[in-house]
Amino acid sequence: QKEVEQNSGPLSVPEGAIASLNCTYSDRGSQSFFWYRQYSGKSPELIMSIYSNGDKEDGRFTAQLNKASQYVSLLIRDSQPSDSATYLCAVMGGGSYIPTFGRGTSLIVHP
Amino acid sequence: NAGVTQTPKFQVLKTGQSMTLQCAQDMNHNSMYWYRQDPGMGLRLIYYSASEGTTDKGEVPNGYNVSRLNKREFSLRLESAAPSQTSVYFCASSEDGTGVGYTFGSGTRLTVV
Image: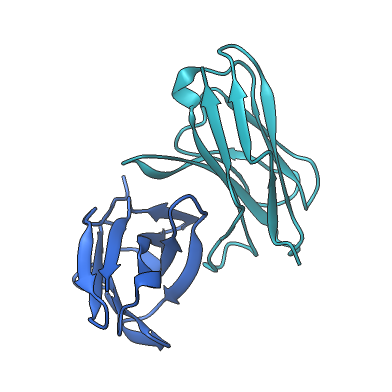
């Protein structure tokens, strides 16, 4: 069974700091990796996708993928209180186009 | 451009009642999905439809049925609601199976008493 593991948190960081969110996965055949942000009471929103080893940057967000170590991370630079949310990691591949979701990490950015 | 629209947003059912959750997308996506989200359990796939005319079971299909009415619409039916089906239900769609991420609807918060 494919597993995606995330620390549930909460991860608390001060405003302006770098928040680092981590995700590990069990299926070595995974090929597509996604980060979703979910505000309390709202639906998940796709914020980053990454498909190859290395870093992918989009504004204040950087996704990092290391397939050899089977982990993917999300860095949020200059964290803002508006970044406070639950971040879901999703992993897809290995012959399936249905992603497996982690349970999410709660991030709190305090002023 | 509405994206993925779910109705209703809230619903309270009595045990044994039936209801249908509606989902429609206007992005011309081929694939549609129904998830439930419970505290501490994350998102769990109930059913999905890879393309119009096909449906498949996901991780937790028991107690549910689905209909892919056309390319736009994918409904989820609870035939005889149980308290264990109290959850938040999300519909999602994606362009196809190439790995592009999902677009989620706003969710239906269902309580079964």
